[in-house]
Image (cartoon, rainbow, N blue to C red; front, side, top):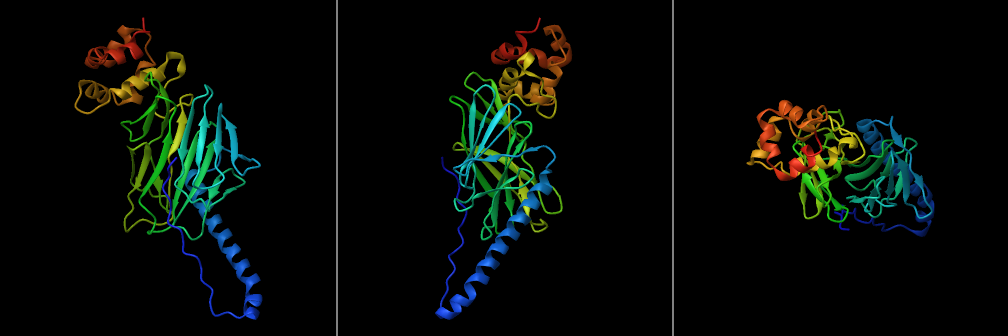
Length: 317
């Protein structure tokens, strides 16, 4: 799996020191380096946990090989030993997704008491962290330490067989399986600067990667924290996603797949408030007549799209 590499700091050069000077300076120098690294890691952790909060985090346990694992909310989340690895989420149905982290292979995992896994290198302008929610969600967090940090981050996606990723109307990403059923989502992207001010950010899908752009400017206060967050299909999605009992995930997948600008279905879904709002409306009806009443003229348009009719309306009375 390909992940973007961060620029490595050049090796320090030591010249013109006598053996005695080396003996005199080695221990203090190492102590100072360790203290600087610890201070930097602490600062990065504070920035991440200030931005995300820590009330509902699961604390991963470390395995013998340095990787970590957390089981929460019906999902199993495996985290890498290094910042250049990938985290893997396996849901309650056995479907698995891997997300590559754009960190350094020299940054090893450190777990905070709150459960945040930090991959930090003092010399780099960007650090990576990961969090697992008690609900089974998984987040990859980027900390941009200063203005020298890249403005774009690539997360390699290894999706279940036959699955595809689509941008949704909120700026998030839907992952649909080969039958069009929703596997899960990356929530709409967010980023915050050191003052808590939102920083504009966006996703795109490119070459099998989720690409997050963070649009800082001269007024941005560093560090900036940004967060792609994955939820599998068993989780409630903010904005009214309904439960599996009505097979809403298959309906949501069909709606998302039909949500293309310039089409009649796009206009009908947009008029209803978007995919999530439309699902919330449909969750309150139990018949085709009820759906027609709730959707007005949009019902005819959506009912006429074969995939939407089959996924959203055929099971209604």
